[in-house]
Image (cartoon, rainbow, N blue to C red; front, side, top):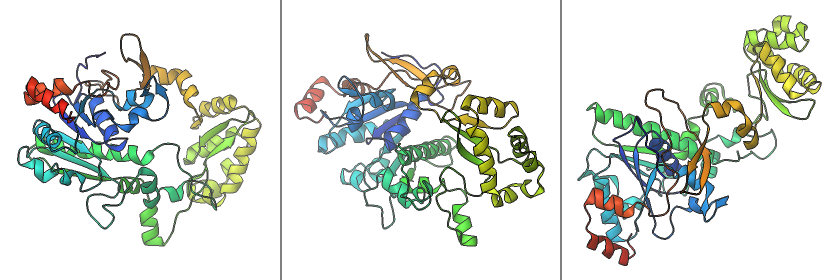
Length: 402
């Protein structure tokens, strides 16, 4: 089932996706959401492993319907010389290639940047790997979990003295995808403006997480400070924390602006803290962090979460609950912003998948169709782009190349 996208900002851009799981595929999901034509190459008979991960609808993962949306599934055996030849031909008709294999694999298949440059010098060749294409760690296997650790990110997550905590998501993959998207759009912009022809975008998972470390590096380099895990707080910023309310629900309160802090303290009945010159700025509040957090914790423990939020919002103090999936689904703001999309799979089945951001008022993105069946577009794409004959298609099928 297909829904036409009227004015996607990336219409006219064709992307060849070679890879699997999350980092590469999520990159192209977002680009496809905003109008790019995405041709996803999958192994014949097997497909992307995401098709079988986590909760299933029939024989297909619910996740696939989201991460595979708006893509054309073309099955090609990349290990077969004839399959490699097909991909080389397809790449000649594309603006962008995205791959997330181990460094060197694409070169082994004669599908590396230099192999494709001869027929398509304008190709933006995007590579996502654990440690990048160069350096002593380049060939190490690098899943998101491992790369989050070496990047310095995991060291900061959790409670002092305990094992670092893993977010229950493949955050490293998703952050890498966002960096890949930025790189692709910058490279396309440079190409469009005549600054440079096609180029290689080299994205390393550990570097994209390293890129999120804010002041960790200069604090160590200049002051010798090694920031440690800090539980539910944020080192050096007070108060910003999670507090238990009377009904055992948790509220997040950010009261770290100077004027916000005064309003917060007044609302919780601590006019003495609001007027205390020693707590008037963040540096002073850091010194008195425990006293401040104890006062807020006591007040929250005496009120149910809804009352806490309403009272703080009334005095313009940022506060909010910690939502699970059910909470989000029932929230009118999530609904008003279109974050839950019901998309048809076929004439009798549909699935709810997340809407995507950012929101563009003139050229918005959208979901045209849910993740397709394996190889659904193979013949269509090969006939259209490569003018492949019926005999050639049949030969490739008989040899299990497509």
